[in-house]
Structures are given as structure tokens and as C-alpha cells.
Amino acid sequence: MSRPDAGSSDAARLSAVEGLLECWLGLDPGTIGSAAIQRAVRIRMTALEIDGLEAYVDVAERDRAERDRLVEEVVVPESWFFRDRQVFDFVRGFATTVAALPGRGPLRILSAPCAGGEEPYSVAMALLEAGLGPARFIIDAVDVSRKALGRAERGVYSANAFRNADHSFRDRWFCGEDGGFVIDTAVRQCVRFHWGNIVDRGFAEGLGGPAAAYDVIFCRNLLIYLTAEARDRVEKNVGRLLAADGLLVVGAAEPPTLQGRWIPAADSSIFALKRGPQGGGPLAVPKAAATATGRPRPGPTPLTGAMELASASIVEATAGPATGHLPLDEVVRQAGGLANDQRFVEALTCCQQHLSQFGPSAEVFFLMGMIQQSAGDADQAEGCFHKTLYLDPDHEDALLALALSASRRGDAATASRFRQAAARASARKAAS
Image (cartoon, rainbow, N blue to C red; front, top):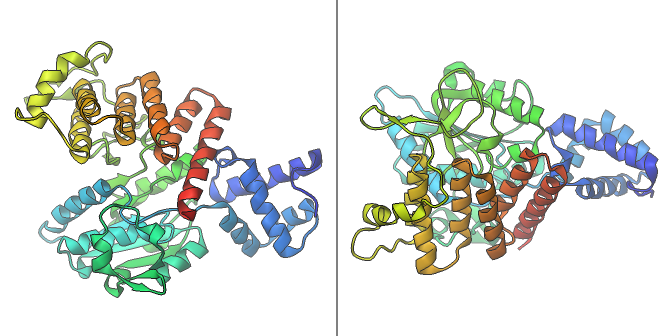
């Protein structure tokens, strides 16, 4: 069998395969690297007993089934239950508020891509535990991987799908069977699984029209792997499918990739967005915002040299006068809320005080990076993301954030390296 990377002609043919993946998936080949694509092609050539890359490209172009098999080798449907628990807590509160409105029909939620079902099932468990009966919400889950959808519909998971410290939900909603965990039928019946690609124009037209818009759309950790054109198509699909007052939930590194007019709907640690004023423009920290009295609030305060000025007020405002100590989850909540109010200096001071009291923390450094990014200080943000990786080399969100930073400054090679490192970190977690 000829190697896909042997010689200039094979390199050109491999480029053709990358072009097909870009066309089918909107995939930016640089985000996962040519080596990963070469590996996928070699696996499929071996399975078909095809000896030449040119012959394989011909088959892949003509045979939809082979296209799907190649896609299966390329995509990494990596997820786990209640990934970023604070996101599900926020969505649960939003959902129960909306569901309580007079005359309200069933709440509609979309998870795309849904991987092996961990995300939509997490939403279902959160809503059931909040007291919403199955008739009061509809969850549609869509993915381009038929293999992942099959796993989701079976509802059987390994211990790797339970990575949170709190496993109490597993005791309530799963039963052990042959070394795995089977999800309760009551949860499984709350989710409808569909094959589809959110990059496609006309995506999900069969799942409901404008009269049945989604109240919440989860689209996490996909945009960072797509070309700019594909991201634009995803955003247009989301804009078409999301209710006027609905929520869009994205991954930690993804808000800057959106080109439409979106504004934060929650603390900065949750990455939930809502529609902003009409007229478009990039998602960015507003230069001015209204205070509670209606007077304009000035834009972000320069951060250099300002940390000490906020120290006393932040202790009094968030920690109380007794100890000034905040546990990690409370730091994330408090600092995220302050940053969402554009009180960036106070948010960073909150983080700094936690570091001084309890020592280095990958999660706190990552949060500081996101705050610095929101404040417009890209250099300081990158420094915080690198500190995150020093403590946790497999911190996927920090790797993706650094990839985005490199991409925005035009350093494609560095961006590719960070994306590949994120993909490897994800694969290691999936294998553990």
C-alpha cells in the first residue's frame, strides 16, 4: 500500500482528501493536523484493500457510505456527563423560569453536535431533577457521527464518561451492568437523536420551523475546528433556529469566533450568549454599559497597576470581613460575575487573593486568562493560559484558547500546534 505522504503526487491527493473533509464537515484541516488525516485515510485504505491514494480519493468522492466511514475516523466524539457543571446549573434555572410562564408550551432544546449523548442526557437529568416532567420539554440531539449516535441510543457508558467529583447523579439515573453504566429509560425517552451536520445549509429543517424555535442551543467545542466560512454557516443556522430570547451555549474558547451580534447572558465562566442589538458586528466587550441608575459606565479600566486599588473592596464585597477566604467554585462564580459586569480589576483581584491563600490553580489561571481576554489584554491572557498549561498540560480549553490567540495574530503554525495538542489531550482523556 502506498503511503499518503510519499511523494508530491500523494501529497496533492491527500490535499484533495482534506478538501473533501472541508466540504463535507467545514473542517479546517490545520486544526487537527495532516498526520491525523493521513492516519484516517490509511485505516480506510486498508479496510477497502485499496493500494493507491488516487483510487481511494475516487471512491470517497463517489460513495456516500465511504464518506461517512472516513468521517468516523476523523471526528473525535469526546464528552462526559455534566461537563462544566455550572453551565447545566445555569440552563436549569433558565429553563424552569421559562417553563413557568403562563401558556407556555414545551421547552425546546437542541444539542449539536451531541457526541455520544452525554450532553443532552445531562440536560434531561438536570431538568427532571428540577421538577420538570418529560412532557414539559423536548430535547433534540444531532451529530454527524452515526457511530456516536448509536452509542447514545444504546445509553451504555464506561467510567470515563463520569469525570466529575460528584457522582450522585450516576447513582440516581444509572444502573451498573457488565462493567458499564446503563442510563435510566426515563432519561433516555427525553431525548430524540438525529443524524445531521449543523454546518449544512438548511440544517434541522425537519425538526421544526420558526413557530417551534429552540429556547436553548448547545453548540460547544465545534467552532474552533471549522473554517471561517463554515463558522458563518453554523451561526446562520443558529440564528434561524434560536428563539428571539433564547440561549446559545458555546465552549470556553469560542465566543471570539462568532461574527454576529451576541452578548453574554451569564457569568463569563458559563459561556452562554443571547442575541444583542440588531446590526451585527463581532462579539466583544462593550465600550460602555449602563449602570443600575441608567448612567453610562466607563469602559474597561487599564489593569496594570490597578490591582491593589481593588483589593480591600473585593474582600468586603465577596468574601465577608471574617476570613476573606473563598473556595474555588465560589471564586469562579464571584469573579465571573464581576467580569460580566466589566469590573475586571475586581474580578482579577478576587482570583489573585485565592492564589495567594491556596497556591497555584490551573482553573483560576484559566479564569484569569478569560477575564484578561474580555478586558482586551491579549498578552496577559496568553500568559495566564500558559500558566494553566504548566499546572495542567492537558487543559483542553487553555490549549484551544491559545490556538485562537495565535490564529487571530496570524500565526497559523502555532495555532495548528495548539489545536493538535488539544486533540491529543482529548484523545488521552477518552482512552483513560
